[in-house]
Amino acid sequence: MAVQARGPGDVIDMLLVSRHASTVSVREVAWDDPAAAGLRAAMSEELDPRLAAHETRLAPVLAAPADEVALTLLMEDDGEAVACGSLRRLPDVVDVDGASARHEVKKLYVAPGHRRRGLASLLLAELRGAAAQAGDGALVLHTATPMPEAVVFYQERGWREIPPFGRYADVADVSICFGAPTAGRLAD
Image 1 (cartoon, rainbow, N blue to C red):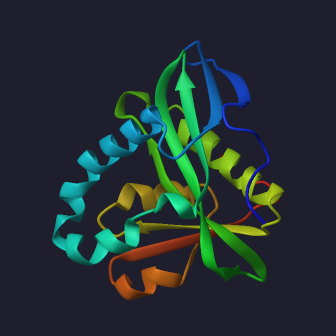
Image 2: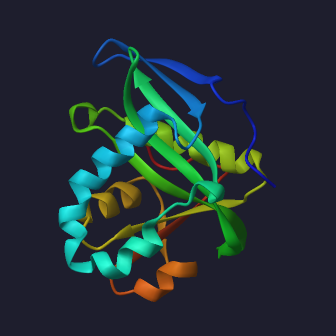
């Protein structure tokens, strides 16, 4: 089942982030949306140096071909693109504690000047909700050993480490994969 709970451009959620008195919105955009593509480019600029030692092996498995992307969300703060994240359709279902994951979180990124405000958690919750609406009982994601802060981020939010799945099994020595149910509350 494809993730099509909303139409492109629909505003998913509007909320007030009180610590900074700004209005944050999340909307679905195309994978090639210029703002989302710009954020992914910034993500690559930031992370590529950290992954350089493994680039030859990681590059092919970290790619998210457009035809595999089921959903891309863009978060804006007072009209400025500040975060993005996508769901990739998995070629094979991944079992997470007896629940089926048919989608993987890809390219979750918050621009540096907007971090530590809970925006990544909000975007991740939207992606979990979209996967649940698509019928997934769980959702999975991948990060890498050179990104320990990402590992801590997911662990602190209740995601459980799982064995490397799919193409990540080929780079298991630098891969850390997580799974979480799509229903129920995880840590904030």
